[in-house]
View 1: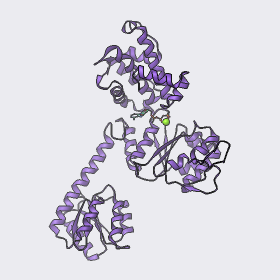
View 2 (view 1 turned 180 degrees about the horizontal axis):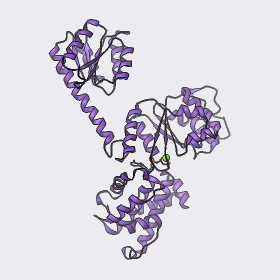
View 3 (view 1 turned 90 degrees about the vertical axis):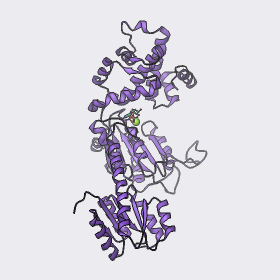
Length: 452
Ligand SMILES: Nc1ncnc2c1ncn2[C@@H]1O[C@H](COP(=O)(O)OP(=O)(O)OP(=O)(O)O)[C@@H](O)[C@H]1O
Ligand SMILES: [Mg+2]
């Protein structure tokens, strides 16, 4: 029997129909697997990953159509053809409303079955191809750009483990897209419309982190004037992103462990455990395994977090992605004005060591584009001089005639402001503090420089 026509999971409790249906379908060249009850069906589905499912809506143990409909949800991503017992049209319609691809009524006409199954199979194949193409393309709806092997693999893994409840550690050097990956996991997750809540474990002082994460009750400490829910609660039904989890104190690690074990946590000053079903994604630039070895990270927590480890590679490990990324950032900054890189500038980008990785590339391009655009207008070329100026602020000979002093000062402002915003993760108050100006002052500059 050839597998080329596709693989069908046939779920029905009547041995007679199982035999008959399986024979018909095998006769059309399909591979058929059988299940006779709900539990077995889900198990076989997960094991076998069939192309389509043929589901009798009245199967044991519950034998109610409602239970059959609940079962439909378990077969997400694969077309399901519903078989109804007594030409029950209302039920069949309800099933299609709830995501079934099509329905067919017993007694089954073999020709009709062939047509319906053929169409479902076609749809399944198209969807599989689309998924494959998406994971291989240079850019996709995950926002993770690149066509290098490690990036394609990363996207593929995200698509696979996104829709599970596995906790994930995203590990990689600074500026390599760890947060981007965490957001992509959320987007492909079981509830993308749920909240995505990010906590920077290193930025919050240790003594505040507990209350920030778990919330506190009124009167639990001086200044706690009312009950305050924490971020863990805010992430219920969505994703809790623990950024720089390696910076967390050992005392907090114990509390986090409890959260990972059974989703329970205790607000500061509280006595009753609360519960969250947030999915946990953690990121770190540190090597957690060696932290475990030297005792600064709990081993039990490490293994709880590590449902899966995703690595974001340094930019120099995937230099072939640099032109794509540069083009993307140019498009974003220059918009319809269409800037391009001079050949010399493009070559230099490929050779630069990029210690700050994609973030560094992005702020350099943003800055160089902002410098070059006001001077030259549409169709501008970004030269080596612009890049050097954006990077170090030095003016190369022959560059002076291209801009006035005001333009050069504005350029320096752009450069420092973009760098500060990057460092402050787009927090404007923090960026203003880094620059030694007021928040209002920063906002005015952003407006004047067209950086809003
Ligand atoms: N593959 C990529 N495609 C498009 N943009 C990317 C990619 N990787 C990173 N970026 C961009 O680079 C910037 C830095 O990414 P991100 O903040 O996710 O990195 P990070 O690893 O969390 O950095 P840090 O360690 O400094 O927190 C972001 O603006 C992000 O959108
Ligand atoms: Mg980050």
